[in-house]
Length: 77
Image 1 (cartoon, rainbow, N blue to C red):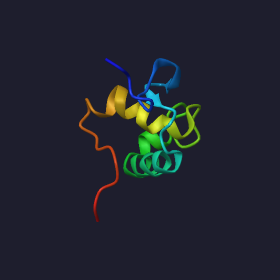
Image 2 (cartoon, rainbow, N blue to C red):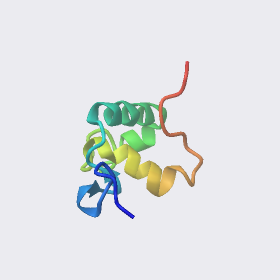
Image 3 (cartoon, rainbow, N blue to C red):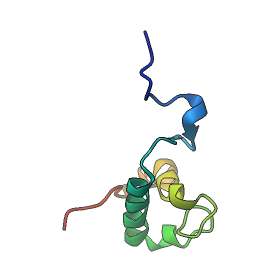
């Protein structure tokens, strides 16, 4: 079975995220998550100014947020 050219491969993954991800979209999703969850936004690793940068919000969601029933993504107003 052939792997599609755009399929994530281990060398393209950072923290489980395909580095081909549109960074503007990722930033918008991260911003929505941080606005929704101030505790995450303030964190020194996964927060707005955290070590993981724009990928921190998704990392938090993948490791903890889903289990905590937090919402990922923008919500309709």
